[in-house]
Image 1 (cartoon, helix red, strand yellow):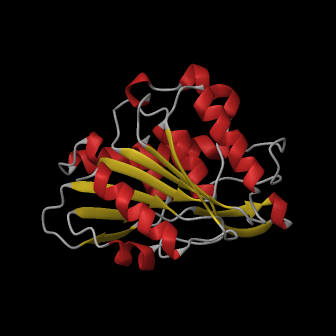
Image 2: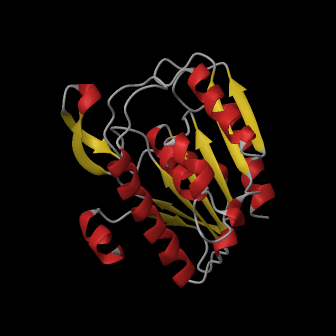
Length: 224
C-alpha cells in the first residue's frame, strides 16, 4: 500500500541543517498551496536538530471552489461544521502521512521524536492521523483548522496517543475556518480527554509572528 501511495505523490521538500537529525516534523500545507509554503516559517524556527518533511498534496477538483483543480488533501464541500466530508479523501491522505512516518522511523527517528504539523486542511489531516496512529508520536500542531470525522474518533483513537502534546492555534478573525468551528473541535477533543495547548491570535486565516514564537517554544519543549 505504501508504494502505491508514494507513486502518486510528488517528492516532499526536505530541510535539515544536521547530517544526523534527532527528530522529524512532517508539516502539511493548506488548500491550494504546496510543500514550499511553510519553508520561510521553517527557516525562522531555528531547530538545527530537526529534519522537516514538507509534502505536497495531490492536485484534484475541489467542489467548494466550483470544481477548480488545485492541490488538496481532500475534497471540500463546505466550510461549516455540518458540511459533508470527503471521508475517502481524508483516509487517503492519512495513509500517505502514515507512510511518511514509517519512512522517518526507517531512517532512525523514533516515532516519539516525530511531530505532525499542518495548516488549515493540512491541520485537519494531521489531527486525523496523529490521534489514530498506532505508535506514540512526539506531538501534533494543528494551525487554523478543525477536527475532521469527529464521530469516528471515539472508536478509532489510539490509546498510545491519548496524552499526545497537542498545539492548536486559530485567528479570531479567520474568515475561512471560523473561530467558532475551531472552538467546537477543541471542545470535542477535551470531551475525549485530550489536553490542548491552545492559542488564539488577532489575525485572519494566516500565521503571525507571535504564533511562530509560540510554535518554536512548543517544539523546543516537545523535541528538546
